[in-house]
Length: 112
Length: 115
Image 1 (cartoon, rainbow over the protein chains, first blue to last red):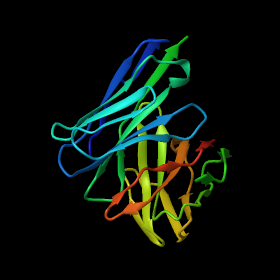
Image 2 (image 1 turned 30 degrees about the horizontal axis):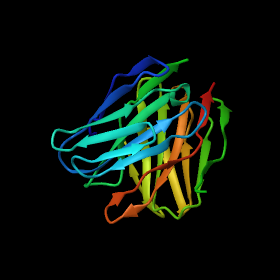
Image 3 (image 1 turned 45 degrees about the vertical axis):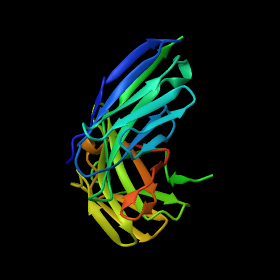
Image 4 (image 1 turned 90 degrees about the horizontal axis):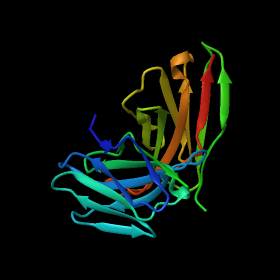
């Protein structure tokens, strides 16, 4: 079992605050790092798939960075809105197998 | 619009029953996965399949089996349901490019309660 860790486990922020959270993963056998957003009563949906060291991806107010050499990725949300409330999952995709290795997620609550 | 569909949103079963959870995807994906999600534990992989009739154990296969007779359908079977299998079950699929996955697409989840 590969160890993928996310921190913090949960986060409460005020509307308008910016926030970020971390995903740590093994630095060996790396192929890709995925970020998913999982809103209550919905299915997890992919935000980003990142494959290159130094990659930065952006979708609206959400962005992510990737450091494969040290094994971490940051997800940033600028100017949080209540609709950003969700659990954010990262998943490590190694080049040695077919499966994803998910972290336990960061639960974000944005207070209006 | 791509779709992964799970047969039931909510299910209540009795201890000892044989339970079938069905998942169908319409994207012609090679890989299909079954996860369970429990508070504080994240998504844990039960089984996955990378081709028809092929399956591999994930991290927590005990008490479960799977079947993949057609590419689009992946079934999870609880041979004899127990209360500790009460959980949210998520099915997912992904495309293989070379030896690795593209993003996963998830079903809506089945909340199973075993009484």
